Length: 336
Length: 204
Image 1 (tube, chains in turn yellow, green):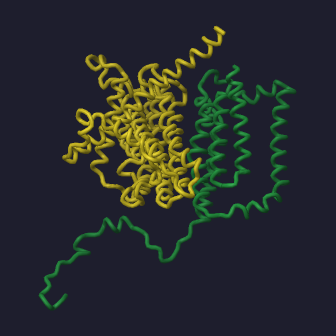
Image 2: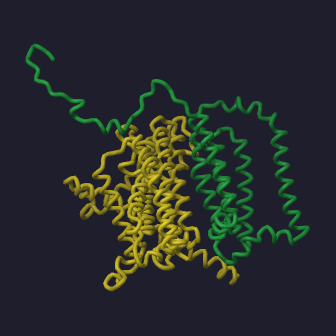
């Protein structure tokens, strides 16, 4: 019995507690991300944003959540019941499960696996299933069109994202996320790989279906795209999943290019601030740019989106991978 | 050890079950989704074997790209699958034969290892030489260093297959207007807009 306790039950409880320690702040972050987005966009458009519920409107996300809870949920006629409910759950599940490999500080990671970056890439490439299944299962033209657009868009931008990741991996020599961050002790990869940083950020916008690439839910033509038939909690799950994905993509950007938990300069007073706070600050910076882009840019036309992905980003990142490899070999900078 | 055993049987049972569902599901979209589930179970088995790189690549390539395209096609095409399935039983002998051949080959390999244990060492000889490197590194060494010519040759085969597919499907259709971005950008205001002073009641 004692062996069962120390060998199995105790580690299980510790893992569950660790998962809670990641998921609960993440969900609070998602809630306040919606608040921050509305406030920032309000400021950029000379409005106030939410300001009624609580001081400075700080309780607005919870009011919204309660409202969504109390709504009626509707199953469209002719829809596929199981898949219709599975799609939002899948989206939300994938947005959470990816956080298992994100390192918050040296050794502060739930699962320190050797192929961490591939795991993240795999999970983010699965996000398309939630959307396609939702579009197909709701048995609606708008939803289906949104789903098809999203599938094509996400598959296209994954290709250039993969090449960007390869060029980072060439400089690191490992697929482990902790090693990727530690390789940036001397210089953040955002500086030597600046074009890749920009491409990665734009691809991340496309991957999370954010403006200016929010064609899958383009409200001016498709009403709300793939989630047009959803209401109440299934809709809320899509919403939470989308925002959690944005935070995840910002986390990936800061791990790959902005040095993860490392302070900007390796001496005091920067080193006094603990790593997870630096990491959170970098994520917040990326999220701010997401919102900034949304408030600034008009939506891309669909053919322009495809052209940008396949004819601009893909060749450019391919050339950059070759260039990076060439420079590393020529100057003997290849990591051991 | 017990948990690994349980995990193996769960993955293996789900893999076989979802494989059966792929061919027996009535709705083709469900078939593709079961196929995705099967890929996942296979990836889980790879992780149990310690081949985490293969597992992740399986998920990225097959689930993230190939199965998405399958799903795309199956959703878009309006095929009557009941008609297609009507004659499916006539392929059973051929399919069964292929299955039996694959099973026999696997049995031959595994049987060979059991009869002469020395043979097993030959199979994993290149990997063993690298000691404790991670399996990403080992695969990199094997594919890009030891077997680089074979790797290049398989790449060329794939490239030719891709070109073949494009040649087979590419046709230039008459009367299709395409956007010419160069021409659009080269337009100047002088060429397309003229300002005329039109006297009242006379027209241009």
